[in-house]
Image 1 (cartoon, rainbow, N blue to C red):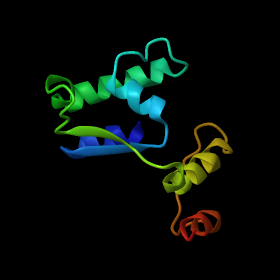
Image 2: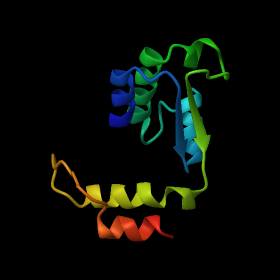
Image 3: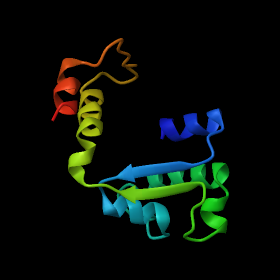
Length: 110
């Protein structure tokens, strides 16, 4: 979510978002998300997409500015390691590193 807001601030026009979860991809692209467990988060993402990338909804399935691609789970090892590290931190902690942490370096080298 923060990265989408930042790309909007920077004026980036073409976004390709990747996920390893087909349900997230389908929820963002469709309308069946409202009753889903993460429906509120999906609604927030879609609202940001709609306000920032008007072509997402006006061109119906020909996303010229925003697209969601499905990637194999093994491609997301670094993202999962970062999320895990963040989940183990106290609330409102900002993580900033000068170098890549050792545990992430190990995942990146696989």
